[in-house]
Length: 305
Image (cartoon, rainbow, N blue to C red; front, side, top):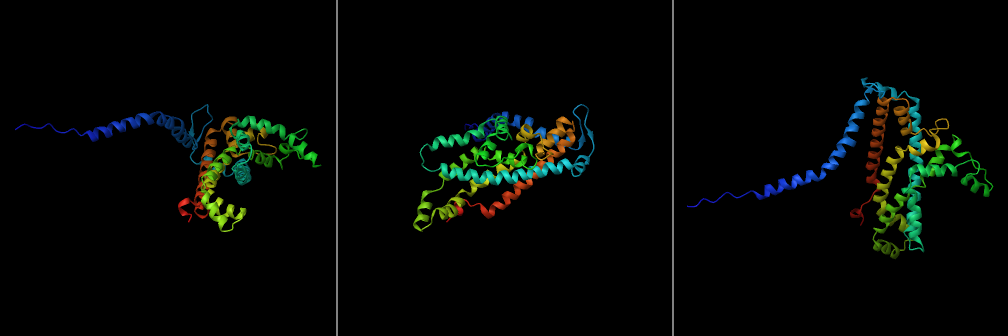
């Protein structure tokens, strides 16, 4: 009686081959993740418990850096400035971006040209944008004060006045909302026309259709944009560095600007690492609060009857 050879486990061989291909294909990303994200984060966490000046070896100091943070006036000032900036830039930018998206979603003549115009500022270099606004905010001969002068209004000193410096940067942040506009346009295009038709049959006017159809259906898009805008606002750095360097009188001392000065101007790398982790915790807590609140105001298509 002939003995049959054992069957090869082709399924297991194929699974191993697919696994090898999987790890080979993600290897570049994995190397980048470990080398440029995971290791720097773990390294900064370690340095936050040390005294390190970039020139000598780190010295373990335990929680001393974190204890020092809460008694540091610059920390509280920078945190206050950053939170005020976020409170001004995020809601204002969201409302303006949504309003412009509503207009640009209409079948108007030349609408593609205007969509391009509103999107361009969001892809320009932030440094170039900041220098442009530096000329717009000039007290003498600046474009903004010239426009106000036409209406008989004497413009303020803007970036040179500690009462106007932060509002000036908030106003500037509303100019770079092109990315949000594009996302809102995509969200608006995804709303079924049948919902508007049903609302119109029920006698809903323009405001009622916006309130009871557009906003609920667009709420996931608003939620997405708001979360990203909050994270970006809490990490703002470049405009404060280029335009004001934190002045006047620390009126625009953003958190990241204070962190940068501690790390690279005062060579307090351990203390700066502790500041970075405090900011990480603040962003995480605020983001989680927004996500938690989304159950009360974000509606998904499956929930709409």
